[in-house]
Image (cartoon, rainbow, N blue to C red; front, side, top):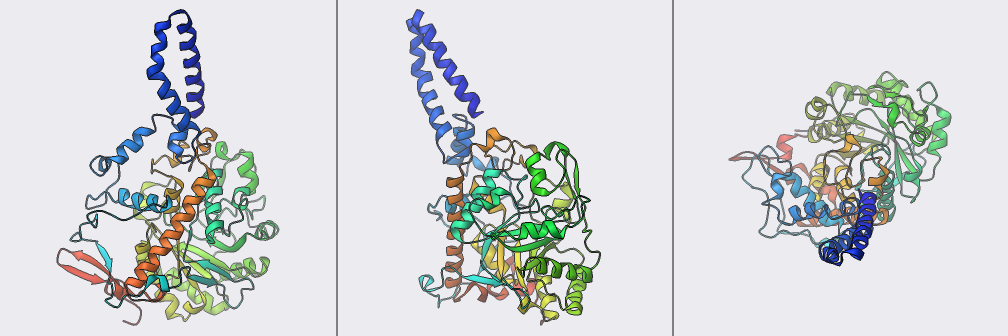
Length: 502
């Protein structure tokens, strides 16, 4: 669209000038055409707005609708079960933080506090001074068998692969991670040059396709694994068992999308259809999985190794804990994804109705680890529609040590939720491989937005912590968080998600 506009506008101006040479009255058309052309060329070469860069002039209509919200915008966004334009609220918060402008609201809360599902945290009359608290709280990942423990921020970038996202989107995410000193999960598509360009810390995710550690027959390759994990940017490794958006569902990389570049990164043959099965070939039970985790740790020279899952059958996670005790092999972390997690494309039934939601899954994982006396050595990462400091507070109360976010990081990049991730037509250049659209995404500008969103969300978490009377976010308890479960009944998280001891 951008290149077409530039060519068309230039041709139109030349045509009007040529006609005006013979018919001077035609030159009056420049009074209308001229300002539009100037505006369009300004849009095409500015770097702050991908929509305007990709769609000169017409992109302004999007900002027009946004400027007269909520009256107009509520007709263009998704609403929750109570009819509230929740995506608009989330987007507004993330965009304002990403753009480093005020995120305060006039007229108070945008939510109806009497609605079922409304949540809040108890403040204290003995609130702390937020400025006196640690402004960069960090958690160390790595148990007794880990030789290279990693100190991480409480908020990091969740798994999104190159291929699902554009190369510039990956670069911008890593730019922000490097600037803000937090990690960037690669997604299961392997470690690409775009993940490495800016030197941000990486959590390398290995899925059932073993991309980046894949032998020609599709099985796990120790040699390829060692080659990839040796990158100094790779600080930890995550074995993906399942993801919240489509747990128990494999994936297909169509031949037409399997370009030479993507094939090289993933370790597959280009222009062929590649399947990622819904299960791992390297192990078939919990004990074998623990030995595989030890293998990954040994081959990485002792980097932190963990696994990610969306909880399904509760007894299967209990079996994993039994296997940890039996073998003595402990993962350094467990990432818990909620069934509400997102993806570029998934069957509707899977995205809506398969997999345990984050809060229930997180509570089960935490309680089970405590029951087997394993929690002290294993860190828990929470992931699943994590978009605000309050969401983080709720996850920490339920036992998480760290939070990962994908959705909010995409919004910080400029995603407008056009819902075209699976069509290769993302208008902001975030979730597409169309080079003409990718050009609209400026890496430095969007990387700064990722940095600002992370920084200000951590600041907000510290302020919430102080308001609740705590010194550290980890002190937030289930009794601190409340939810309205009916018009006249409120329960704490402890009552809804009881701890093991109660």
